[in-house]
Length: 102
Image 1 (cartoon, rainbow, N blue to C red):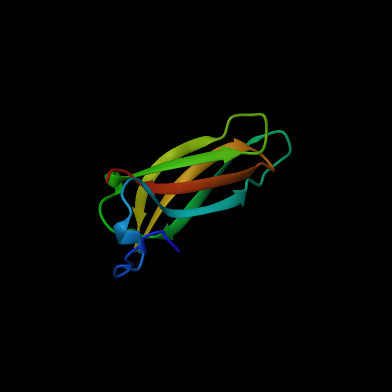
Image 2: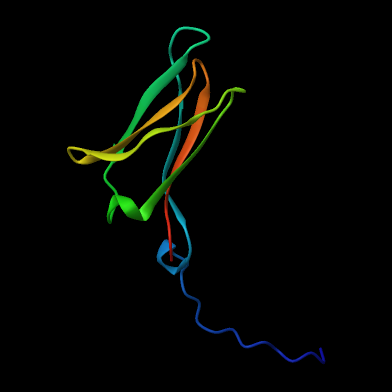
């Protein structure tokens, strides 16, 4: 063919260390349990992450019409971090802890 051949250089493996920007460090879901029609609070506990807690943000959403929100921010519990979620009983809550910055 008349097209010039492209030179193929050395390839580097892609790893999380090559990515810039915010990173999801932990994520999950839970169902708030309590008496029907009431507001419930539930704790989310996970192994401590690298760095300090002020480097992370929490985002979440619930499956009910009522508001779902972080009731208390990140705290230390032994070798774990935890936060509390508040929302309607039987609401499924999806959450993520994201390391902010570059």
